Length: 625
Image (tube, rainbow, N blue to C red; front, side, top):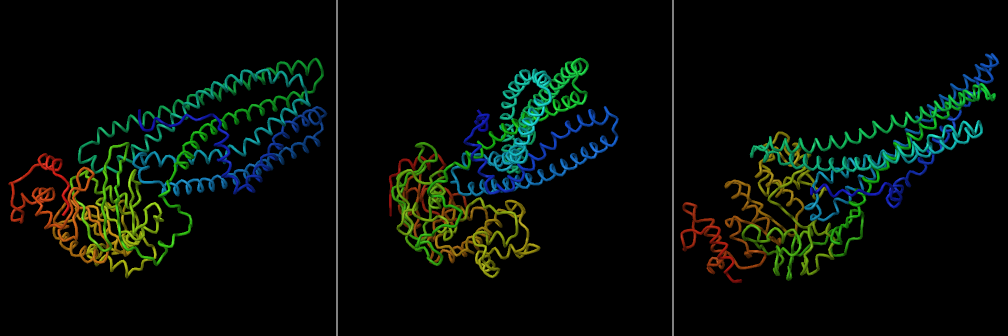
């Protein structure tokens, strides 16, 4: 089953969802009340047409009274002009309300998405979330602009027609309504079929958006691996599924509305047949018959409109169920609200972190009990520089993610300055942490805008000072507009090394008290690495620093190196102490330097492959210097 096949079928009408939807109308109740009043007046105007026609036939044409006929014609024209004005006013009012509600919904969704833990985005494709914020909200806009208010007009029109027809002739009314059982059968059949087709359309659209987002984001990989033809065929299949789902809905609409028109025509023919006989034999006026024909035709128009409103309601129920399911996803106690809130005393502006970090018997798994971290205990003193090394998958990056509050450990406690992480306001804490990832993300905008992303109040001088400190100023100065140069999405026009230098400058600009560097020098050349190491040494002075690295040459002068393997701390000490232990770190060092000509390396076996290293990790006990 595809990840998009779990779209809930939902109910045709869910009063709980509708109550929540109508809550978005509350701030605009004045405009909605005005629109309802306009719709009701317009419905009265619509009822006046057949009555005026009856008067014109019976009292004007029948008696050859041209003056009376002229007056009725002017009155009829006036009714049409008033109806036009009322229709324009109703559209303006409800479209205005609909657009504002769409903005409110999208703001609420985007606000909530920013509060959700990173684990949520691990499980949900971005394309699917985009469908919620764009297409699903558009469906609700149609409900608010063409459904909620217009339904009052349709119902009032039907009620008015029933009253008018009953007062004119009950027998003709009974003939007209003899086709209602047929209408009920057609409508119920259409309901069942179109409900299923709408669900299929939403599912296929979510698949389409997810596939597009994934393939466009990874286009370079697609082209490198010559996947264009296969991915095109995959897109063809998904696109064809979306087309077929829409064509099924079109098929049902193409059948339903002509059948409804046919039933309406059948009702009119019955009235002409029966009413014509009454005109000839029982003496009802021709104007009465003409008015009845017009009322019958107008009676089926609101029924057709109500059927269309039911389609809108079906789509809105499905979309609102998905939207509210997303809004009801718990953000978790560790995720801060975006609204203004009281900041704990220890995290108010002006207060500075000491930089003490403690992991106490931490266990963590992304799913079930597939533990990534196993009983990890580790501390970083204020101002201490600690490096985390180990094989891929040993849990180094997971430790950093836990410290940033992206995830919460299943067991154990993480403390910052002696306080459990759960008690911190993460916004205030993150403002004092500089986190540089291996995969740098730059946003569209300017270089300066990206550098002050963490603090919009930073001045140009502060940005330039931070950029010079990490040797990013030279890169920026080469750009045509310098700090005002435009950055494309994800920094596509910059090299990996240039993006990492900008990420360093962005972190430094906020003057963090704690540094987290996750493979932060992995994409720079040798010359840039030398410059960056010099900048890092100055940067880490007086700051607590946790450096995650595979390249051991970048962390030899830190205060302490922690070696991890399979989620456990296996060794701990300085570079020299760990080499002297001739343990895991010693083997890692050998693997990295054994093939580099002229590189200084400890004595030992000529080389070790990955399998030999992993075997050694399994058999080596914990050794702490």
